[in-house]
Amino acid sequence: MEKIIKPTSGYLALGILFLSLLGIIFSFIQIGSNGQIGYVPVLIILFIVFVVIIKGLIIVNPNHSRVLNLFGRYVGTIKANGLFFINPFFTAQKISLRSENLQGQTLKVNDKLGNPIEIAAVIVWKIGDTYKAAYEVQSYMDYVRVQSEAAVRHLAVSFAYDSFEDENADLTLRDGGEDVNKILESELSARLSKAGVVVEEARITHLAYAPEIAGAMLQRQQASAIVAARAKIVEGAVGMVEMALQKLSDKNIVELDDERKAAMVSNLMVVLCGEKAAQPIVNTGTLYN
Image (cartoon, rainbow, N blue to C red; front, top):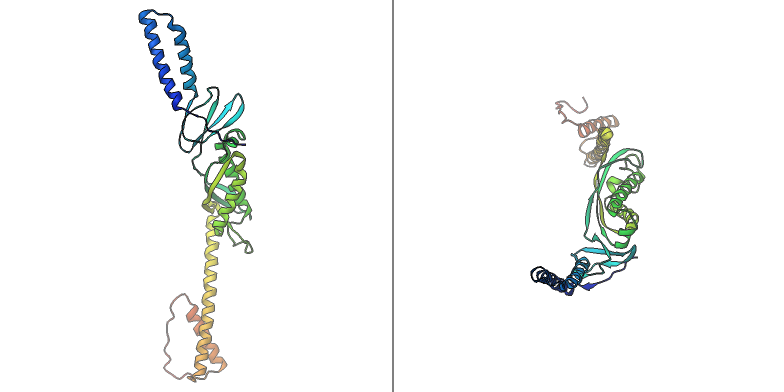
């Protein structure tokens, strides 16, 4: 499991580093100019101190971390920011803790009903457990990319694109909205937790029928819309005809037998349901001629 450590501040080591550098320069001058070979051991010691300190100094920037390893053993993770001095034999792997965007490529898959569709998603993620990111997977960047694509594909085959063919579907990709996004986010969290990745947000950014069936599906949607509109028009027309007959009867404006009522209903339905404006015909005779 991840272990957070805070090593020694590096400012004291930095001061010693500068002093050792000055000592090295002074020793070189004494050996080269004055021929004082007694400074050779001092030069060697100062050089070793310089190398050890410069190897042990590390800088950790904001929202970054260092995973420390000593001869194949995990030592801990530094998440504090600043200048630090660590064991020079440690290997320090740099891992960013910043949020990352993954814009997935557009995938062509079949939905639950077998219709070919195109789908893409954007995922916002960051590293939450540096130990898992460093040691549980080969490359957490590749792992996030591959598993995200797999999760989007699994989401697409789990639901129908819309409810035209599956009217009893409780949730579809097109109408699911936030519910679909939450399902995707939940599956991504389960898949990526092995790599220590925290999924902050996941959203579908592209959703459409594949080009080979897009035209046919558009015609089907248009036909469904026309049928629904016609049904609404007929429903309204029947109500208006019923109201007209009732008003004529209640106010005794004219008495109509069944044949005249049928003719009136027929004419009103043609006028109300027709796509074009009706052409009026003025009757100059009596109603019963």
